[in-house]
Length: 144
Image 1 (cartoon, helix red, strand yellow):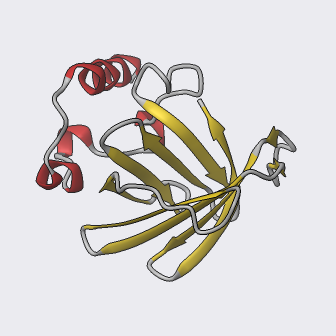
Image 2 (tube, one colour; image 1 turned 120 degrees about the vertical axis):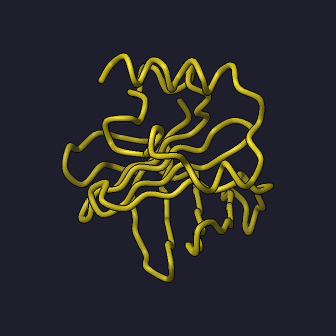
């Protein structure tokens, strides 16, 4: 498994920016799972700029520096890769991303406000609000 993660991290660092077609439809060889997501320690090297996490149901979000958003929800049972849109600033201290891929509609709002993980108690410098297909999820996040 670690070899697969390392291979994905190397590919992410060395590959050309993907086109929307291959961003939205990962192949079976690169299926998104919780195990395939880079660790917090390796996320920056894998091209991740910001990570968000939430509980009940568990979810994880990686916003990559230049080309995509990777989102897993329902404890990793569902996942999608979205093209990275230009962020907007709906209000001071907030950043919003709105994207669509494979029939899913995703809105992410990141606010500079302290947050504490509901299960671990870990502190984060940002709150993260996700709306996936009109379903709201809340959590915390930080730059990696």
